Length: 128
Image (cartoon, rainbow, N blue to C red; front, side, top):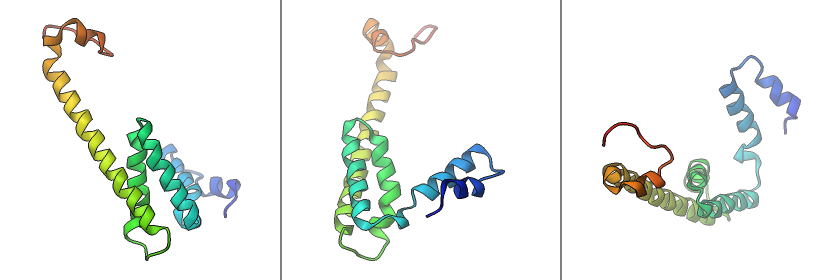
């Protein structure tokens, strides 16, 4: 495994985003992690999504998709596949609920009067 200084050296002369991406890739490369640890990490991201953090489900699906469905079979793969599928389902549910709520709120906001103002982060100016 590369040392911190070697990773920094590989990113010299790059902009901030490129630096972050290369640094993240060097640290979080799943190929370097044992299968048991992959399963544990996948499970943590899956359970973390239930704490109203659906972004963790997105990360879980994107990050572990290859491990679950592309790589050759190994002992922990069926469990990782289950967590990835459930994360995708949870993410889809969150996106559906959030999109529905945003659509309803935007459409009926002016009719709800003070209640809508009370639950709004910013109150739009002008006439409804």
